[in-house]
Amino acid sequence: MRKKIKWLILSGIILIAGALLIAAVGITLSRDGNALFPDGIVRSEALTMFIILIISVPVLLIALLLALVFSKEKPSKVVATINGINGQVNVGSAKPAQPQEEKEEGDETRFCMLGEIEEKRDGYGHEDYNNNVTLEQLCNDFRNYAASKLKLYYDIDDIRRFIAGMGVSHILILQGMSGTGKTSLAHAFGSYVDNQSTIIPVQPMWKERTDLIGYYNEFTRKFNETLLLEKMYEANYSEDMYITVLDEMNIARIEYYFAEFLSLLELPNPDERYIEVVSDKWANDPAQLKDGKIKLPANMWFIGTANNDDSTFAISDKVYDRAMILNLDNKSERYVAPETEKLHISCEKFNSLVEEAIEEYGVSRRNMKRLEALDKYLIEHFHITFGNRIMKQIKTYIPVYVSCGGDELIALDDILSKKVIRKLETQNPIYLRNAAEGLVEYINELFGNDKMTLCKEYIHRLERNA
Image (cartoon, rainbow, N blue to C red; front, side, top):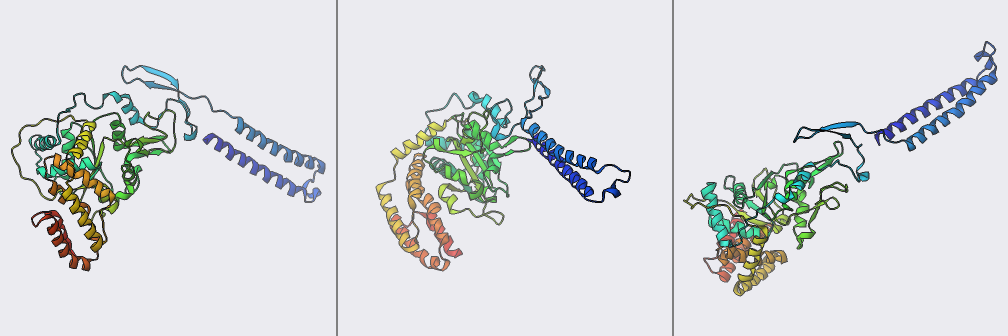
């Protein structure tokens, strides 16, 4: 392509020069011939020269254009590559670069790291998965492992919320003050399942998915691969659980750079979750790229840490509704934990534990009636409702939390405070201040005065700030 451009430029220069020359001769001939030819040169000879110029310039231009059309690439240069293993020098021809749309064959690849992962595809995961663990045992052992091996201490209720949240959604948001262990909790779980978590520091200028998975560089003709893209590719060859931590995820707008992930994770069928990496297809692209798209791994969880201060963006309802929320506001006290080893658990096994919990510990009929009554009250007084997505999350979260060793009402209190009561923040402050006490009294009437403490504390905090 560059060679053809050079030919076009050269042809244009010749055409312009020829036109100027013809114009100059024509102007000259239009003047007095005696003054121009004092030595008696016959004017007809000048006319003959003029005619030759008129004919030769177009002929030359046509010849150049034909050469451009039928020209072939020069033979490729001979290059030598050194085998890094035995030092052998291999001599071959370097194939010329072609435009993306014409790229069909050859040894050149635009994905270097993905190609290396492809070569090792049979070496990911573990062979000794533990299929005898329960969710309650998993929570207790994870807590003891973090304390005994990593010197990280967490309350058992926070561990249950974390595991139950993973059972509901592949997107979790850990909120709280700095230093309460948000990033370390996600890191500790990766260490516990013997598959280190991937920490990705979010940058303030991120606006689109290419900031997460990389982009194709037109100058180098290579794809700038990111760590996340490499881990996604690897996860599709493994049965392990993969944890990706988006550190300080709300330092940029989540609904911008993470929008496509949010939408894809809503699809019920994991086999339909494909995200675009490149807009075209090369014959030698890695095997997992289907028409330039990669499958979003069903065994990968995205865990974002969020600080709520002046340096961050508010998290939108779109993100809150799809993610599970865990508030880490207090540090847990140290304790002496028994020595606990890592757990090799497959994603398939974890999913089966979640399904078993839903079948065994469904939401009780009594609490379902309470939820229906509370939903009607909120619609009537505040024009907010649970919605189908939130109801589905409730029906999954509570059984998994109970299977982890927790109490049903505590789980209901937790998810209602984060998914439903939080929506009161959009209410008129004056109206909320006047209606808050009535809502608290109605919750006491439904559940009891000493129950649903998280919901009632949230309402009182909104009332004070209104």
